[in-house]
Amino acid sequence: SSSSSNSSSSSSSSSSSNWKTYHQGIVMTQDGLQKAFQKNGLLKYGEVGDVFDPNLHSALYEYPDPSKEPGVIGQVMKAGYKLNDRVLRPAEV
Image 1 (cartoon, one colour):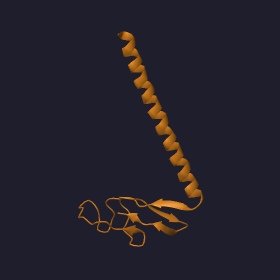
Image 2 (cartoon, helix red, strand yellow):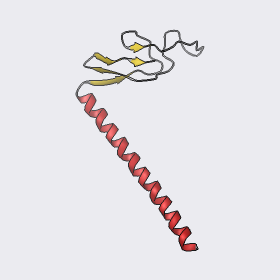
Image 3 (tube, helix red, strand yellow):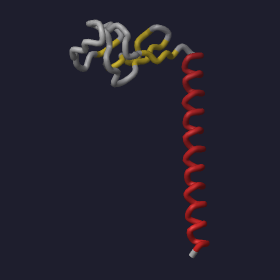
Image 4 (cartoon, one colour):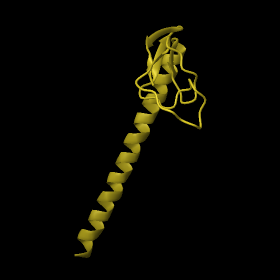
């Protein structure tokens, strides 16, 4: 009975270790892609607090927020992308 409980705890720690390794691999891949994109002129943009620009942003909705100035982005649904200062996809805000 005690040997079966040891094997289940070691398999759960092994599973946890596998997920950790998997997550690290995804993060490393994402970082590598972002660096390659930047190197080739692809820029991700659209942050909370940026001033809304209809040339860069697609407004999904507007809501009053007393903590922010009018015309400031309060939420980003999808980041936008520019290639060499040309908008490929506007940020959905």
